[in-house]
Image (cartoon, rainbow, N blue to C red; front, side):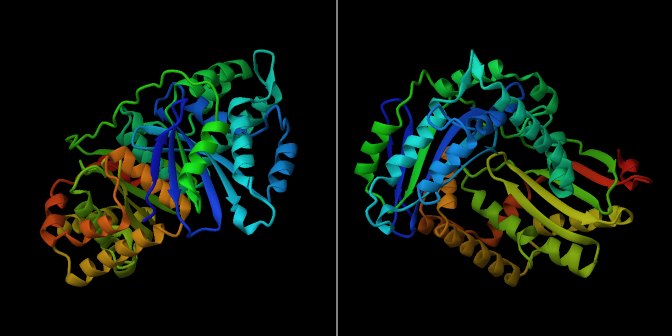
Length: 431
């Protein structure tokens, strides 16, 4: 496991340096933290696209692209994500390491300078961003928001989570909504940006074959921009059993129904029982040997896909299956039987051992991907669980069958969402 070195810059940015000789590149991620909330999530998700259009030093996308190409094809990307009820706006730079470039020893400095310019010195027009940039990026962002419906699997999961958490911040879509997007203009977005820059908690992660002291000094020198008092981001609220199960249906022009079940687990990555829950989810639906895949897809031939996954910072589990509309009730019954079997501890030693092996492999593979190393570190810091791969593997190995059955008893069905083809919807009888 790559162990990171943590320091705090003079302007309040938290710097995490992950020194490792495993990679030929240096990955830089500048991560802004925000509370996930409907009133400004659309501004948050639009902002990085506008900032990427250029800075005063490189005022057009083409000039910026040329400069990145000069830096040996360095890549610059930005996106938004959420963990629990916290939104992240992340700027990522991927740079070739200097040691593989004869005569070059300032590549990280140059990359950080570009990143700093984009963040703190955008192209302005009067009292706002360049209006053409905002208009064009709004058009693209609207396509992103509306485009979710084109991926019916992702759409159905998102719809289930929104219904499940409609009165909680987690139910907010990370890209915002079209109505709020249309209210944004170049001046209002710039006003938001100024608050965003000064009040958002910020982490900078750098991973590669680097000297921590040298990099810390370099970052403190280059990445200087005005900051203010950081906002406090509320902790994610973890809810348990909500009582009566909600049934929600929707009809679209689809060739295959999408069945999504949302469960409350009451456990997050911060809990010691998260590792039994991880084993539970693996046995239930994370691998080809898992119960959902074997019983719903293979044996009953009811589903084109069937899986489960955890929302580790919100205490949720999603079960999703692609089925024929006519197979809704039968599929639901088989899924519920797998959940009941897990509650009874009805799983064989082969299922258990294969799951443990699969999860072990996942932990070890993460070490070979710099972005995943950073993501794990971020998960750990959010949860107060900063552990290396060896420690995680020890926790996994310590999980017993009784532990898995114990956490299974607390998993409660909250919401059932069914996306069906236009016509008779077998779900309506339950609504």
